[in-house]
Amino acid sequence: MKNLFIIFFLFFTYTKCLSQTKAEALLSLGEKIDIYKLYDSKKNYNYLLEEVDFNHKKTIKFIQFCTAGKLCSTAYYLTAKEYSGITIKQTDKSKHIQIFFPNNSIETKKINIKTEEHFSGETAFSITIFLEKNTPQTEVNKIKKGFVDLLKMYNIEKKDILD
Image 1: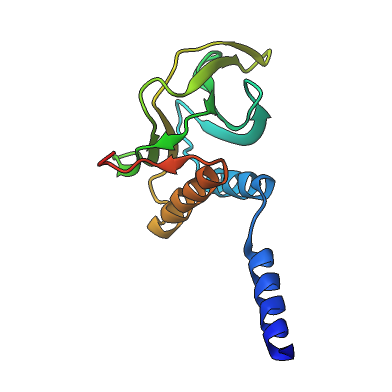
Image 2: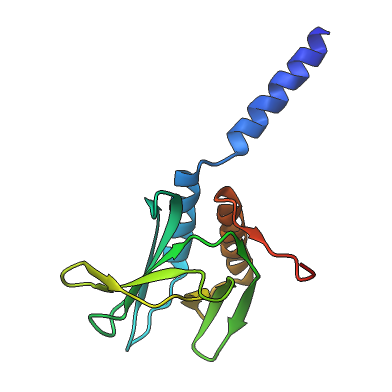
């Protein structure tokens, strides 16, 4: 009986140490993206992930800042209950991860990066993270897995294609 107690105690301690809080997951994923984000001579991207209250519900605010113009930065509020898929693509200049949600399920706001004002945006169905072309595939996969885990923490599950 004593051994059984020790096993349960060690198992509980092990799983508790491995589990991340939402705040830790947001920070960790943001740091990983920051390492591999795309630097381009015409447009640089920066990303910020944070938890916000949106319509009285805790949700993920994904901000994509770019340096091409004063209104090209966008905040995405991931309030959808499901996502349909995640793709990884490579072009001549970059790799990018795109997460798809049901049509018009993501509220957005345009951001003036000089004044930090938020303006009404259109609804969206996807978010895209642009990474350097030479980002190792293992790191791209870790970022993808980080998003999957984060979405699960906010009860955003992958929609079964047969539903």
